[in-house]
Length: 202
Image 1 (cartoon, rainbow, N blue to C red):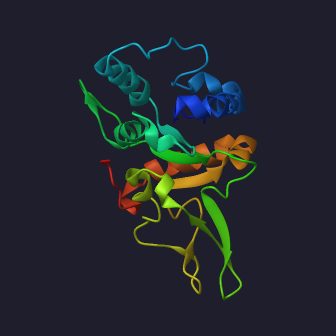
Image 2 (image 1 turned 90 degrees about the vertical axis):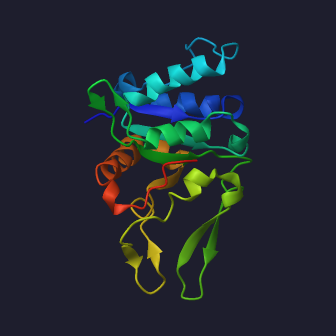
């Protein structure tokens, strides 16, 4: 079943990837609630006006897709959008559920080593090391937060890339090939938040 989605991203460096993600949704793009290339420019609007519009967009969604780009932390909105996505917001007689969140890592300078490197361990297994300096704290704290932890390898204490963290990171190439796989995974985790130690405030 298609999920209502919102994309959080830094406009100046990730709008093209935003468009690719929306295109990759195919017919399910009609459930996308965020900005598109056709959206009106809100850059001259007040902060309060923009915030209310963003709240309206996010409130009706179940999954937030965050584009992880090199300069995302200079955005005025991304960490707030993630925080709002993770909250349970009451409007009139309805309370929104906590959104699932998936991070799509943008390809930069031909690859992903700017954020993530593969490291071979002494036991022969390979693990991915992430440079958390590029991530907001609210993303970092919602990684590797499964409770109780389920190891995919007991010997090297590694966890499943998709279920071991509430906010999973996936490359743009993998996401664009099969967006529903990652959107559904994020949605599934939002239905079992008790299995994660969630940090809801930035």
